[in-house]
Image 1 (cartoon, helix red, strand yellow):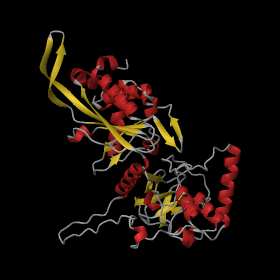
Image 2 (cartoon, helix red, strand yellow; image 1 turned 60 degrees about the vertical axis):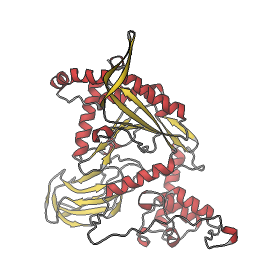
Image 3 (spheres, one colour; image 1 turned 180 degrees about the vertical axis):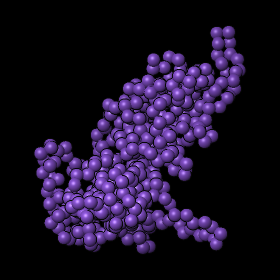
Image 4 (cartoon, one colour; image 1 turned 90 degrees about the horizontal axis):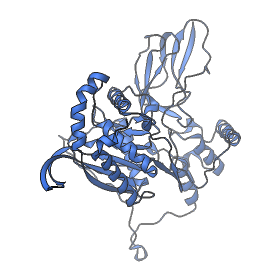
Length: 446
């Protein structure tokens, strides 16, 4: 008999760890090829590690909720024959990249220089004992450990840095800022005539609770959403524009088409792909809205990868992405929307289906909201919220005069990053979306 070491597979160049969320098999269970053995999670999606051999699970090396590095042994499987090679090639899973904030020191490297730099970092991490993972319960990326080693920062000192990354992970910018301010004395906040205008850092108020209050631990996804939203507000200069849209023509067109569409395509025709069609056309007209900020540079994306915020049964939110959405006609968009939404609600999305979005929209009207102020999905620069469609009395202008009529109306709420998107561009973009919706038959992509 031999043993096979089940390892955490590679998950993209910048993903270095994952959390073991649930064991799907117990010690003694029979393992069949491609069986899901353990569920893992990163900052974007949950996925399974499957068996590449057949045998019996004889040992678990990690516990649930434990964070493990790529390449770490998760379990031992007893197999027929010789012990399996430990560095057997593993399947690469592309997951959303974890990217440090860029700094002025960042440079574009040639492949040769990048390879040499990576080799040097790996060698430094392997040779150093000062910053060994065994000496700390915290995780530090190879880049952060390398910088600390060069600056002579001990593991104890590194542990004192409060990181700005997920779960307070220390990023490159955090350690560089620490090094820059290392020699400066911390400001004093004691009462003093010379410091009467200085205030101490804000302290969260103590929350009192009674015996009948319920205390619920935040789930992993809730913690990630919380950190992501807070980080976005700290990063982008949020500003909003609102516009009311008469979608009567759109409403009537869908009412006439939805039954025939479902019969012909075997797909429901919801309002989501209709709104997406208008957004895609407006992004073509205003490409600055399909961009990201990196340092002092604006990266205007060629591909329109449209993210659609999707509510999950447990109340959480995930944003699957339709890649190259401008290449789809209405039928293709409808099928893609229904497919992604259904798999999102059953936790069946693939890792690459929730990354590389360039613009996001959310349909808050599904929950009865008329309008909202959505938070930008970093590193994008805009997000559009669609409110509930309502029947409203409205003044209708005709050559014969004005009269009051019943119209279907909706409010669009556009949040955008005022660091690079001014009020004119942000306002004209959402106005263009409104124009495409109001003139629906002319908007149709075919």
